[in-house]
Amino acid sequence: MTAAAKGPASYFPSIEKKYGRPVTEWKDLIRSSPLTKHMELVSWLKTEHGLGHGHANALVAHTLAENTGK
Image (cartoon, rainbow, N blue to C red):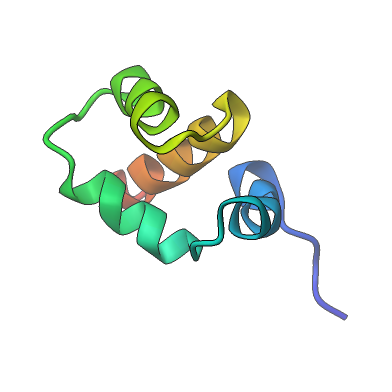
């Protein structure tokens, strides 16, 4: 049995289902953006890519944590 995802990663299955793109694509998009601040990236995903706030926030939080090693 595998453990259920916790934190931001718990949103990933619904993000993939709702928006039709794998999480890896969203993370690559975030990393390639010239924006660096959390809320700037969240706003960008919401306005430019139509994500809901919770989904955008989860993707940004997880991606930035990976980038900083936290």
